Amino acid sequence: MRGKMTKNNQRIGFTKDQMIQFLKIFQHNTDTMLEMEEQNYENNKKYMAMEQQLFHEKWKCRYLVRRIKNIAKHYGVPDLAVTEEELDEQIKRSEN
Image (cartoon, rainbow, N blue to C red):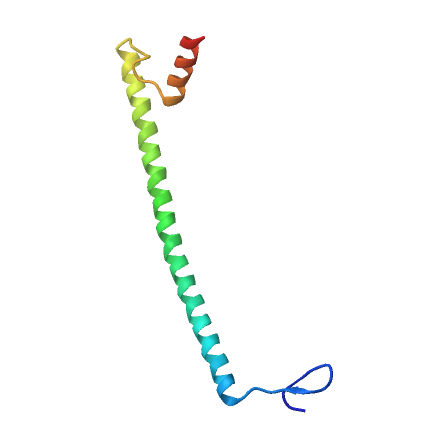
């Protein structure tokens, strides 16, 4: 028996041109999928680089806030430099 058989044992046949069209469609879809995977890989690399850059920027910001707070404390004005959270807390206290 050649070809795919149905429940009624009837062969489902395709012409040579139909099979060529199927293969062209499969090739196009495969190429598209591979291009998308490659783009996804490149996007992931860019995303990870941006995450790393953000981590370092946050670290620098935290370091600068600690340094400014230390200097402000040294000069006797500890509330001169506050974090956003501390500022929010000061605002809440002043409203109550």
